[in-house]
Length: 184
Image (cartoon, rainbow, N blue to C red):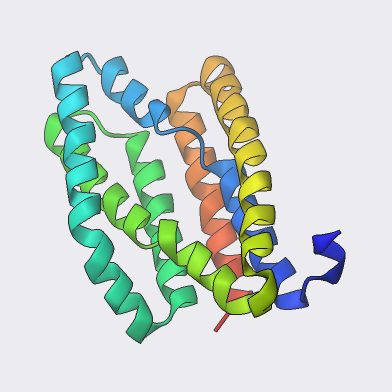
């Protein structure tokens, strides 16, 4: 029932965010790409720790930049970074490439995770903010499960590189949609 009473701006934002979610599979696929290239479990875990550390370091400064630059613009930049990382991930071969890609992946996460909820908070009616975020989060969870299932199917049938290229290209299209709709 919330969808029916929500604003056009909220609906446009959530359509974009959920479309993104359909292309954003589990981070496990990023880690599986490392394993598929023959790197050790230790290296894979180290890369994921590196990603989390960089994300933690970038989250506050990116949030400050988003407050000045604009939440929607920051989110769009984050989506473009995601798209570039995913397409590049299909071609990564050596350890330094994974380090760079996971560093940029952390930048994407810092520019999107909290920002998307802040956008929803700014758009939703003040007495419906929790409902608006809850509505989005509920569907995002379902879409994430679908995205990971589809990614696994594509990986299995068409290969890792194709899965990353499809995801990256899809997210680039979502970024274009978000730029056209402009949530500022």
